[in-house]
Length: 107
Image 1 (cartoon, rainbow, N blue to C red):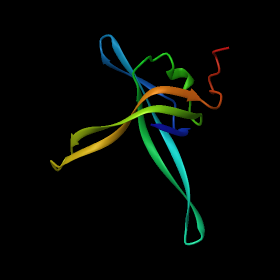
Image 2 (cartoon, rainbow, N blue to C red):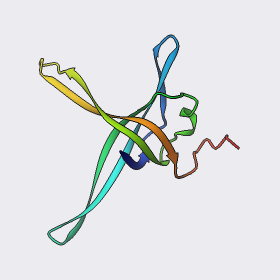
Image 3 (cartoon, one colour):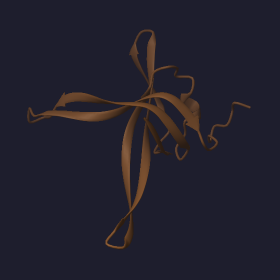
């Protein structure tokens, strides 16, 4: 599946083991629709991970427009009240940068 949106903040890198890092970022995806003749807009915030390389992280900056290819996964967790919960996460396989990064160091 593909989603297109803007990064809400700069990407971060988190170590998951001694030799493996994951790049994490959040994307705002907008949807425009009509309701009772009135134009409305709705925004969904999608938590994303990218496992292929963390070298891309400095280029994924706040406000950048990206198209992501990948799939959704559910991450189960338990609330403070002991209730089983789940959060959705987009596991990114490909990133297409549609606007320039604030850290345009790639040349």
